[in-house]
View: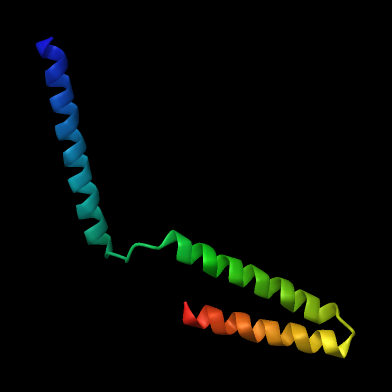
Length: 83
C-alpha cells in the first residue's frame, strides 16, 4: 500500500513541476493578457453580423432598407469600438 501512495506523491510533484515550467515558458514568450472568452464571443458575433449586413447592403435596392442597414452597421461599429 505504501508504493501506491508514493506514486501519487510523485505524480503530484511532476504536475507541479510541469505547471511551473508552463508559467516560465509563458513569461519568456511575453505574457499576453488572458483572453476573456465571453468578450471574444461577443466580438466575433458582432463582426459576423457586420459582414452579413454589409452583404445585404450590397444587394438591397430599397433606399429605406439601405438606410436601415447602414444605421445598423454604424451601431455595430460603435459597439465593436467600445469593446
